[in-house]
Image 1: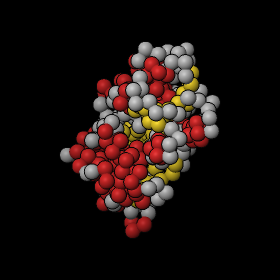
Image 2 (image 1 turned 120 degrees about the vertical axis):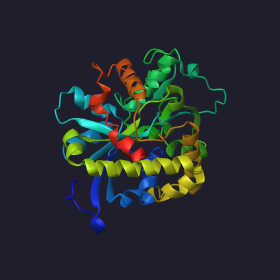
Image 3 (image 1 turned 180 degrees about the vertical axis):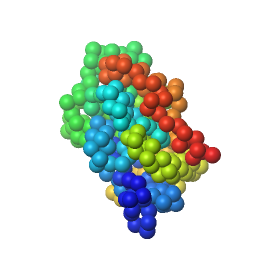
Image 4 (image 1 turned 120 degrees about the horizontal axis):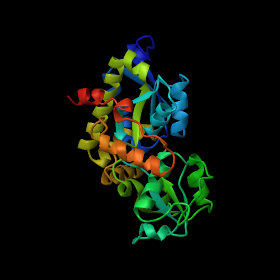
Length: 313
C-alpha cells in the first residue's frame, strides 16, 4: 500500500475490501467518481466481500490494504489478543442501513406486529442481525421467543429466499429494498436504523502497524472520505444519485434518487469521519445483548479519530 505500490499516473494504489456494494455507502462512491481520492494521490481498487468476517480475513491475510465494514470485526480481532490488530480511522455511516420488508402493505406497521412471525435477518453475529435484535428488545419483544429469526439463509441470498416464499419479513439494504417495492413484491414498513439509533455502522480500518507506517496515506484517504461526506451533506438526492450512478450501472437513476432520499431521511450518513464514544458504546451494548461479545473493548484501543480531526481542519 505504501509508496512502493504505484497505480496509474503515479497514484498510490489502495485495495479496499468492502463488505457489500450498496447505495448505503454513497459518500464513498461520490469520492471515487468525482475524483476526490485522485486529488489525494490515491487510486482505489474495490473488492466486494459479502460479510465483515470475510473483509477482516482479507485484511489479515494481506489481500486488502483497507477493510470497509462494521467496526465489530475490529472488536472481535482485538479480543482475540492479536498484537497487530485492526484500528478504525474513518466512519462512513452512523446507523443501520437496512429496511424491514413485509409481503403486504402495512401503513400502520408497529414492531409488535412481528409477534409470532418469521424474519430473515442476515448472518448471526453480523451487525444487521444484532441491530434488529436490539430493536426487538427495545420494543419489548424477545428474539427467538416472540419473533423467529431465521438465519439459515446467507446474507447474499436473503432477498431471493424471501421472494420465493421464505419468511414473513426480511431486512434488506438499498437499492434492493426500493427495487422490490417498485415491483410490488414487497413493501418497506420500517427502518431498522431509525429505530435503533446511532451506531458506528460502517467504517474503514487497517492493521495497526500499517497505519503507523503509512500515516500519510491514511490521512489522504480520510481526507477523500470527508470530501465525499461533505458533498453528500450539501447536495440533493438527485445530485448524489448522478454522482454515484457510474458505480451502479444496472440501477435506474430514478431508483438511485429514491434510495438516496430514503437514506437522507433516516440520517444514515456520517457528516464527519470521526466516531463518537457514545455510539461505539452503543454498538458494544448491541453486541453484548446479542451474546456475541464477552468482553468490551476500550474505545481508544480500536478507534483513531486523529485522522478524521485533521481532515476536518
